[in-house]
Amino acid sequence: MEACFLSHNSFTKTTDQLIPTIRNGSLPHHKRSSQHLQCRKARIPLPISCCHMSSPSPFGDDDKPTLSSDWRSFRAKLVAGEQLTRHVEEVNDLDTVVDHPPLITIGDKWAHVIHEPENGCLLIATEKLDGVHIFERTVILLLSTGPLGPSGIILNRPSLMSIKETRSTALDVEGTFSNSPLFFGGPLEEGIFLLSPKEGNGGDGVGKSGVFEEVMKGLYYGAKESVGCAAEMVKRNAIGLGDFRFFDGYCGWEKEQLRDEIRAGYWTVAACSPSVVGLGSVGSIGLWDEVLGLMSRRKVM
Image (cartoon, rainbow, N blue to C red; front, side):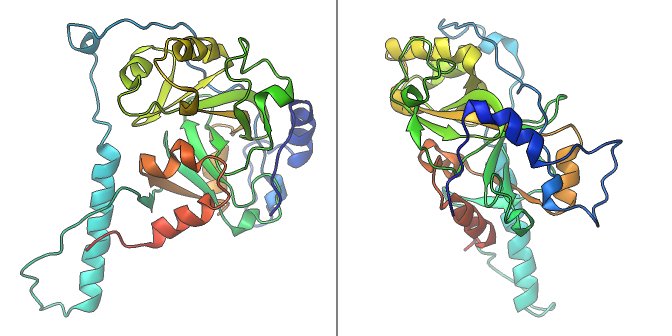
């Protein structure tokens, strides 16, 4: 399959030609073809742009309530347990007593289907998008599901050039990232980057800077408004150049549009472990097959 890459100058034209507008909330699913998918022209919700590198608060992170970032793993174990229960019921008589239930493990890499989109989930293109060049066999990481509508970036399109070769200053005002590869993130015009600091290399500073939004444990995103702070942190050796992946463009939907497309069968929604969408997976054309394989594999034993 050919790689898909569009320049900034082609975004507006491509988005207009891709799919006509869905009006009045009417979605005739039985007549709707894949050519009716439409990305909205609205800016992705952006993190704030100031950079605070202060030390942790002595009062315990400003008294803000926290939610354990391991809740996805907990849910994945519940899903694996349900799969195991169904499997046991299928292979054993109803009267059979299982004295020693198998140990449930989910491993470092896992993915499973969920029914509603959420921050940090994946959208996996189905066969209904085959032939739609931009979205065919894509894996999209959903960055936000806020009131403006869901927004995300395509993970599995290879890079064809560096930031310097595009002559774009949106993601590299100071020249810090000029040699970094630029990946195609979607048809809507905006510069986005992912940031995943290596363990013990600025992770606390990234989370406490107030500049970057956490997508899932250890993975953050920013935009052109926060790239200056990112460059500053690189110069301070708080994080490294290899901790970033840059994207030209993003994907976006109207508030209910994505749910309608999911119901129509264009996308499979999945939760996954951070290791599945690590920076090493960005640009991998095999990611679509890998995620589907993880979703179909029983991670119980």
